[in-house]
Length: 222
Image (cartoon, rainbow, N blue to C red; front, side, top):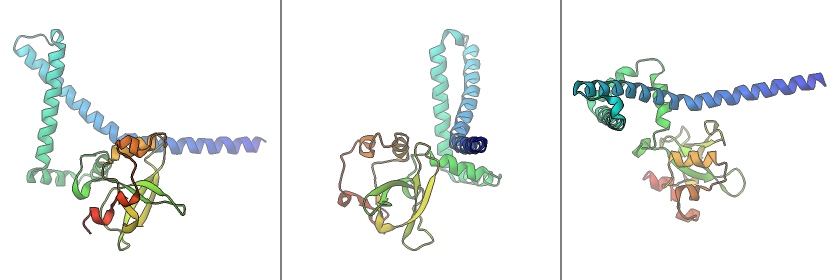
C-alpha cells in the first residue's frame, strides 16, 4: 500500500513538473513582450512628466492627458520601429543581433504569436484527414515550405487545453485544406475552449462541405 502511494505521488509530481514547464514555455514569450512594453512605457511616462513640468503643468492634475500622451508616444515609437525594421538598415541591424546566442530562437517563438504575418510567413489554420477512417483534424502550418518528403508539408496538431504541446505530421498536400478565415488566434480560442466552441462559431462563418474548402495546392499556387 505504501509503495502504491509513493508511486502515485511520484507520478503526480512528475506530471505537475511537466505541465508547469509547458506553462512556463508558453508564457515566456508573452512575459518578455510585456516586460519590454512596460519598460518602454515607463521611460515614456517619465519623459511626458518632464515635458509637463517644462511647460508649467502638474502631471498629477492632468492624469488623463498624461496617460493619453504616453500611450500615443508608445504607439508612434512602435510604428517607427516597425517601419524601420522593413528598411535595409533594419535588416542589417536584425542580422547583427542574430549573432547573439538565443536571439533567433526567442524571435521565432515570439513570431508564433504574430497573427499579422502575411504571404509565406503566415501561420495557416488547416484541416487534414483525421486519425479515424473518417473525419478531419484542425491544425496549424507554421511554414509553407515543402517537407523532406516530396509533396508533403508539416502540420502541427496542438493539445488542449495547453496548446503549446502537440504532434507534428508530414501530410500530403492533397489531404490539406486551408481555413482561410481562421488565424492563429482563432485556433488558440478553439483549443482553449476544448471544443465547447466550434471553429465556425469562433470564426463566425457557416459550416461548409470539404468541397467548398480551399485545397493547399490551390492556396499556394502549386
